[in-house]
Image (cartoon, rainbow, N blue to C red; front, side, top):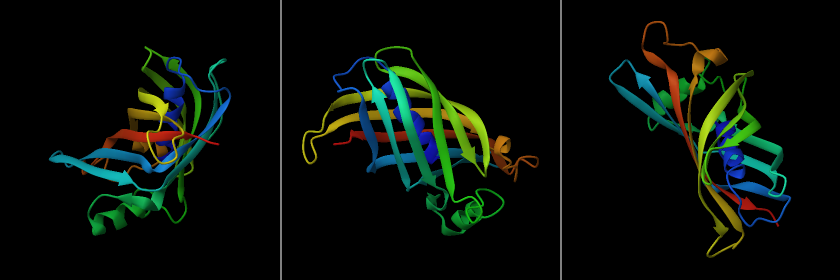
Length: 195
């Protein structure tokens, strides 16, 4: 899911033209970045989770619309489902197996704008050491200098998508219907231009 954060950045970068010096390097603001997910629990309701540790950087050239040097990482052990016992289960071998696979990563391969502020981004998501292609819908909420504090150029991004966890070898609870296979993903992030 850290990887998912990176994809949001990629998509926004391909959407429309904003006054950003090219090429520019950006970093995800860890205090304004969250990777969230929802997965079905026995058909009763969706269980919500969030990853608290996400880091990433990328370079984007506005003139040529070239995205490069993308690196996004999510700390798998930072998962929080708002119940300690469940968090422990999600971290073990049935799900994220954080002892063997501490990081979730994403690398973008392409982005397609659909309007000045929307588009899709496609990339490679790696969970449990297995890599699968993922496409996310992206909305560029705002691109402007921050009004206080660091006052750097900031891209505000929202991304949504869905993955099948069994595609990454995470099949616990799928066959008996205890835990859904489809995982809804939502990412909210602010990417700051680096000095």
